[in-house]
Length: 292
Image (tube, rainbow, N blue to C red; front, side, top):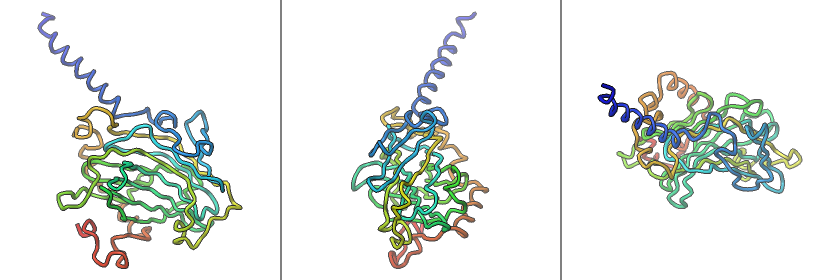
């Protein structure tokens, strides 16, 4: 009698093993991960300091150099997030960046958070940008509605087949939809690594370069913790990026929900300070994605 159910048992066992194998690649780390689990120094390792057993790190910018780190793997679709506490005080001329990049030169795909330093007492601005198949110049800037140097806040990039969403905590500040059917480029096939840097860019970062970095305030520090990458790692199972059962491809993530849509409108109305779509000096005719 028991033999009658043996094939079903094998099928169940096989499915369990397959599920565990898939999750090994989809969920790349326990949440949150240590820095060393998913990342490595990309440049100026001496300016990257691990804290609390690697659960957090400090990036340092001084007159000699900035620094940066990158993920050990690349990913094709998914969600990446980390908690960041930005440079406090007079941070004019500094840029703290958190981004994804395919590292493919003229046809690169890239999704950018760039936190632009400020003079003390002025709001911190975050600039987002999207490159698809080498086409970028899609900058938008939002003034943050809190001081991001006082505490950690979560910054997230969600990348699905339907859209890309940039979140500050639980608030979406930018959505870029997949409109390939309308001949609008969208990152679809190139895996991207995850990067972060702290560097000096006083030729453009603060008030278009009018405010220069004050090196007497150096060194400048930014802090990171709660590193979380959930996506299809490359190399990895080839079926993963097209798997409709990945949680980030689920119905709840195909568009902004009602609460997110209200928060998104609130940000756009009250905190957006620059949108390339409305910059007629650069684009007398709005780019096609702005009209779509």
